[in-house]
Image 1 (tube, rainbow, N blue to C red):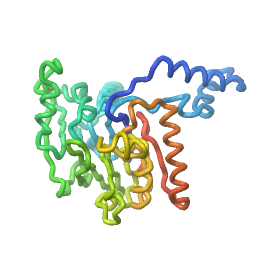
Image 2: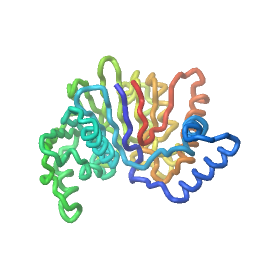
Image 3: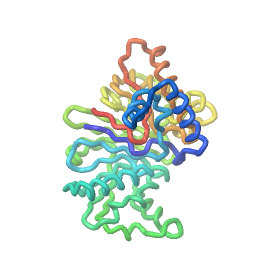
Image 4: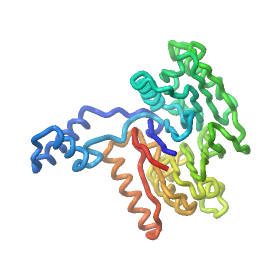
Length: 321
């Protein structure tokens, strides 16, 4: 399996500013002055191998959308603005390569807050007859919320104007499901209005998608239910929107967690790779890069013997599982 991140920001899409682009260009030119860049290939090689990520690229600004690849049908977690980019990529691939791509899309919704569904009205495959879109979640008003999002005056095209075959499936958190060749289970999380985490297992590989979840004092208990849910995951995608100070002070009860608690839970659960997710929309690339470095340093303090691998999700990142 592979995991492709189409949208990784929390709460609100985050645009890149003119000032930020100018700063990146300035740093890139300054770093290039000691290199002999006499050809296009030399310039490309310099960009790819010498410039740090925060100079040559960006963590991106789309809200939550993650694709789990490796099966015949599409599996996606959440329908934030990243879903639009996924849909555009699908259409371009289908047209350019004339590939016989599957027309079945399974979308698992963590919860119904706007940043996790706002990409669906712009999901081009949903307008094409013959495509089949299956939307899953644990909220009983799942379908109603998607309908209301596109009702006037909020949007010019109602959901019924989408010509694909769209269906909604309310799941039971106590049940296990086999969908598109993957075993899927869920868990209720602490978030305003409730959210749900998902566990995907296929061929002995385990991916956990756990965003918009706040962990409190009960997380210290050895029998904490999330320890079992995360246990031995090959990849844990974890809500780390806040610093520890924000999570326990000014933004307590806002329904999100911290990078440090993510490390502690991942270590206790025997997770192989931790991916910090749902990044704070007010943080720029430099701040997020420092956030990642601080998290990795904390792991050394918390458990110097741990082999836990830590990433911070960015739009376009792909991980092999």
